[in-house]
Image (cartoon, rainbow, N blue to C red; front, side, top):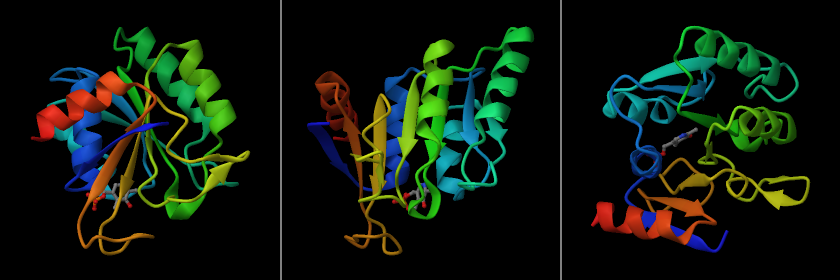
Length: 168
Ligand SMILES: *Cc1c(COP(=O)(O)O)cnc(C)c1O
């Protein structure tokens, strides 16, 4: 990841990621159920519907088995989810290998919420750098703080350029 937009909050970063992925009214977005409300709020801001996925015992983060079951359920109902937000809560990396394999299989773009995981690594690579986009928070309660702030990360320079334009 060599492209980063500095923003006013982690919430703004998630909101911009959803806008960049063209998430809007009527869409469904898969998201961890065990998280801070700010992971889910931007889905509502876009008029979309969150589909909450429960945790696995080992990481307390999104359960890959429940994720795939939910995707299949939504596809059966003609509501294929438009995006997936994976959270690394308390600095603990989610089971990325399994979650990303499922996301790739169903071609669902991934946003990584690494608001609480700045500096955490999964198999030697930083959390927030695996998804199509990742977010960090620099809020007062986070690992590094600017009182309030956030960042959007992506390997895709065009996404970050667009985020900067929209944020300005
Ligand atoms: C803090 C946090 C956010 C939002 O960050 P803000 O900068 O407070 O908007 C999003 N997700 C998680 C998991 C968080 O802990």
